[in-house]
Image (cartoon, rainbow, N blue to C red; front, side, top):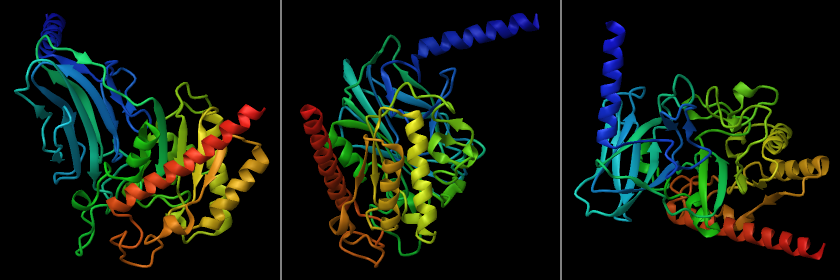
Length: 385
């Protein structure tokens, strides 16, 4: 009788979910940026610790809410999310472990098709982002819509790009700073970074994988491991969402690859020997290429020119040794470094390293222009062959 009761309760539970209109996260009309959301194999949840991660989904009916889980996080607000329905002004919400299982998005909409865009805007860099879950992550279980409503394919840009970066990539201090110290939820904004400008210019959806404090060698804030540690997958973040959750199955070619990947590490390795930074950068390109054989690699010298010589040498060594004709160097030089070279508060930065949102827009445009010049040159060469 115990087994029968369990079966009845399970059936009732599933029936209730169907009546409630719960959409599973593996619904084909629910788009999550591909390389910064971990997807559970059974399709029961997705999770991300990266500001700048987002999803898009269309739905019919009059209301929408998210089923979420933040219980592994701290009791204080550790993450800020942002969403917009039908391109209306965005709404920001701060999350803690006590937030609850339902994030109400909207209600009272007119009948018809609607669009929802949702971002992780910012999170506390110093809460665990790597181990035990991790704590500083958003887990999404489903989307609640009206009874009888359905999902609709969202409008997506055709290209797919990815970035590996540091605090600049996750939008630290793009809104300014707090003289009293770090205030990540107030100062940071992963929706206003250079990556978002770049993606718009290239007509692409972008997966941002950026952790404050991280470098090729340097570990990141929130106990994040370095970008790459040769010979040690557990200490290499490039192929993991968090500890043990792999972005690509080790040793296998990726079935779905970005069109372009940008890597701009080096700033947080400023105290490391140049030779070590060069070696790690070469190792990252080598390992990334083993998995993503079609992706165009853009190795980017950090905006502030930190470890610029080491990065430029890494590119030369990698291309010389590998013969890879689908990898390129982008160096914005003095123009890109204005106000970001570590010399203190400037027109472009609160602290002389992290660009303000206005500067981020300029940097995204510069990178897009550099990218297009490279792609146009490659296209001309291919036509000549």
